[in-house]
Length: 238
Image (tube, rainbow, N blue to C red; front, side, top):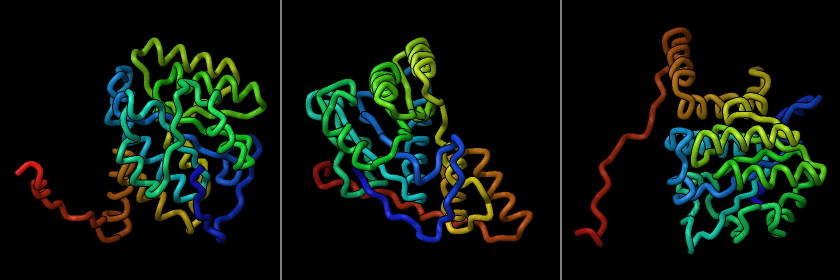
């Protein structure tokens, strides 16, 4: 489990069936190169973008995270560097099982958080998401599947997996809906700027609209991004 620092000034949100930063844990399951290679139902660059946005959101709101990978050396490759960069120093729980709920270390990490609402994102939907979702619900958890952070080998496979988890009782959400559900109120200024940073960097037209409103309507200075510098050739390539 990757514990997150929490903002003591962040207000408590009402639950009443909703996700809050204080009642859930997010699991990133098998976001690895070989798993992404097989995805054909959804734009793969968009999946990377959405996963990183969700990961950053957990950092902003101090939501605990469980990272896990499958057969890293034998098949799937390392967890994406884009995701690892959000959690520097964190080591994913390595598994041999397709179903993470069959892995005692994964389940123990979930149990350690003491939270009963699970937010799952992973590849592929039909196995790495559907199987632990069905079993976690059987064990008394509520599961929320972040659909735009998932993908499968075909549209049919993904759609059938989503039908299966919904029939089992899971709730489909997206990376953006989860971020906004945790923020909930624009008067919560402690997380406002960080949320807007994620929106501007990861959510396309919404983010550009925010930039336009800030600069053209409210007269704020334009967002300054790091200058691009061309990487130097690695010594091994010279």
